[in-house]
Length: 142
Image 1 (cartoon, rainbow, N blue to C red):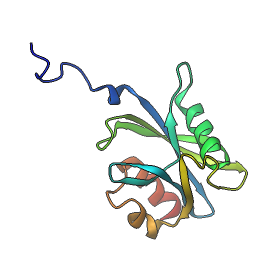
Image 2: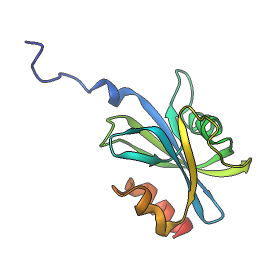
Image 3: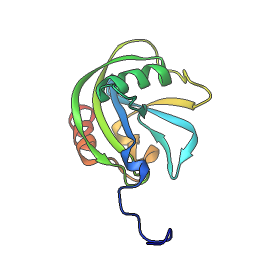
């Protein structure tokens, strides 16, 4: 088969597992704006690659601390999917704030953070959310 033929396996990006933290506090959800957008994804949940041997929930907690300075705990798994824009395997966790104040703690990677109301979500993420995440947010901040 030639190099130009169709791929025979899942693209490499789909094998990269990313953990995202859906952090709700005082009726708002935390979003970060990355310095480098991934396609049309500018604002998103704190998230990052799951390291070898790391539980995905631990990665969501770690990435939230690294990106925003917040200490959080996972309260519920919300589901996973292959992200339609990035091809990455995404695992989503609902999280509570334990301590800290949200800020762009990784300025080389994160441009800004925002606490967003339910009504504002579509302005920040116009393409919509993964349905289980949307249902969770509808229930807790809707």
